[in-house]
Image (tube, rainbow, N blue to C red; front, side):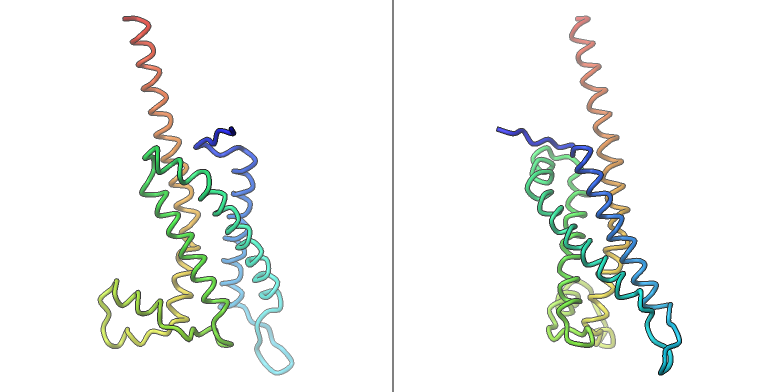
Amino acid sequence: MLRVQMKMSWPARAILALIILTSWCSGLAFYIFNNFLEIEGEFGPEKHPLQYTILKIHGAAAFAMILTFGYLLASHIPIGLKAKRERLVGLTLTFIQLALIVSAYFLYYGDGDGELRSNILVEALAKLLPLSDEHKEIREETFTFLLHFYAGLCYPLFIILHIVLGKRNSNKRRAKRREQAEAGSIG
């Protein structure tokens, strides 16, 4: 039987890094193009044509992210949960990834204007956060977009934190085992 390890292989880490980088850069580029760049068209200002190509790249990277998330759910995450290592950051990454998947679904499958017909996310937000009556009128599109944008923006930071904490704690465990081995061989 194949033994699954906590540490991901070099090719798996490289592929995951490439997918995350592609997704993050294309998402940020789409945000910039969508909100700040317009060109003068035949009938006035219009969106830059590259915006749609960037969105297609982002969508392709998102599919790849979902596949790698499935890989992590089947291999890395269960081992991490059993080992009780980096649980907080690891679970935070898992929930951020789920938030990205769900918000992307709602952004993509909203009506023609990107507005959702369902109030699921707004109702969930209203239960989690005390909102004034004025803020309860928030459009689902706005909440969904902000959730997706900020979750995507901070995702690489949590990945880096997870890796740094994992390496630091792994080095501590290795040093402790080395000390115990030396103490056992001396005594």
